[in-house]
Figure: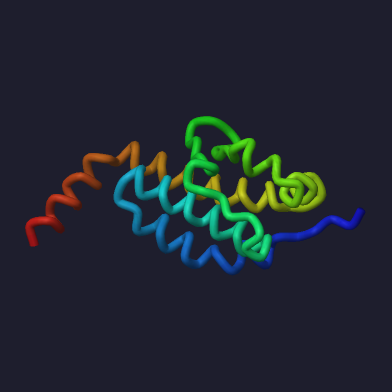
Length: 123
């Protein structure tokens, strides 16, 4: 079977994903950016036939591959077939790795982020 590529969908969402990740001020912002981007990727890639909910996508920054899709999503015949015969997993892993790097950076430098948030709050 010919391998299907999802790179074009990755290229469609990557600018907004990077912007949200770079602007993230908390680890929760990173998680939300990742979850929303993966949902958008799946919805776009499957033409709206698959509509994952927030709880169907989990960001796991301390456990590879740094994300988890619920059984409900993976039981969908469209996704299960594509998952095995495409680069969809690789695309999601790249996004998860970017999110994980930002998440860990914020975790290491949380005091800077907190003071930056306080400074912006009192402007």
